[in-house]
Image (cartoon, rainbow, N blue to C red; front, side):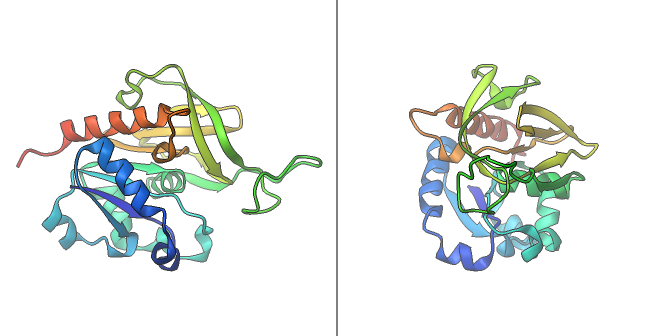
Length: 222
């Protein structure tokens, strides 16, 4: 079993209709069952009972200062201590980086005359749509992919700096930290949305398959 942890507020988790589609995508590429749960539901007893072999962390649309995801002790312990492969998508990437010693924040304000591609966080610069991401360091996460990925991005915040145990893997001209990995554990963050890939923009599917491949190899043998 794998977990898909929704990192947005409980209200948006309950109202959301996209989690089922993402569950199906993750099950297809992991070839296993996926349990979708809210970050508030993660606790040590559940992890011990179900023993997921991979954990994916969702993005979200709520500003971090408006709810308590970064202050929730069990969620922080899941990221910092639970020894299975983990990956954060978009906002999940930012949360993992923050918990593991990095710094996050808004990208920047829009300059005069720059278009605003979405109503989300008006006035903020965003990456919104398909973008090219440059791989800066070889890693099993990018096995079989080119040096440049074409991926889906929807964000106004970014990772400003990485903690000492995190290694930069990919970047772009407008967002320096597009992917990272922990130096000693298979814990990854990707600023893009591999779970929202399409047949015309498939590189994210390759990232998902590679992540689940390395997660299977890493999981402790029962």
